[in-house]
Image (cartoon, rainbow, N blue to C red; front, side, top):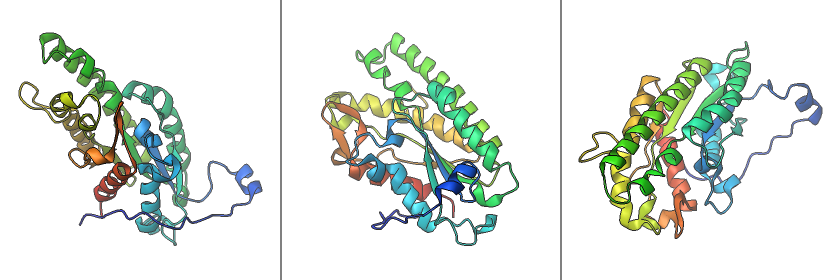
Amino acid sequence: MKRTFVAASVAILLAIPSAALARTPDHASVPVYLALGDSLSTGVGASTPSQTGYVPLFHEYLRRDLSCEGRGASEGCAALRLDNIGVSGATTTSLLRDQMPLALAQLEARNQDDNPRNNVEVITIDIGGNDAFPLLQVCGGGVTVQCAAAIQETFTRIAQNLTLTLTQLRAAAGPDTEIIVMTYYNPLPGCVFAPAAPFGNLVLEGGPGLPAGLNDIIRAIAAGVDASVAETFGRLGVQDLVGGSDCLHADDSGYEIIANAFAEALPN
């Protein structure tokens, strides 16, 4: 059964003494939702990124609906903490360099200790869009030999980096942590590059001359490490995009759609 995210209207406030935080900042007995990614994970384009981006929206969903009881948390995941380490502008290469050391340190401290109540329970990732977006400039004249070579080089790099990222996360997190990777929507129809929207579809989903697109690569690598996939391609309309000169980002309605996709990808 698919689950649909409904934005919570009242936030849950947790009063934790500052002294306790100072003593055990990294090992508090609360579960964690860890988010990695690019500007989508940081909510660029949202009216209030800390509230209406997909990461905080999905966080509220998890606090209500994710069960942590099987790992020793008697009250489910109402206390689930968010640690969003996504970086605007991140690529698969910079994520490995900058975000993965932080993520792996969290997972080693929490998932590899003897306290099941402080585990990282869910990891989400959106990455690869900034690797692929420069192809728009290289391939502006059509799918030439130069364009095809650029696509191949870009996809090879993404595949290598994403495979390493997800393999390391799965090894450090263990088999019980939910890892969800996002496929990309096409942001071009709503912006100044709208005429290039068919090329965006080709790069994302493949087509004549390109058997597999970026999203196909993401799906295949996710399957190899038992990660779920949040499918966003084809789900956002022009009204769900910032548009104009912004040819990348969702607006509030778009981020809610993305949060729904992550909720639907979460296994029962």
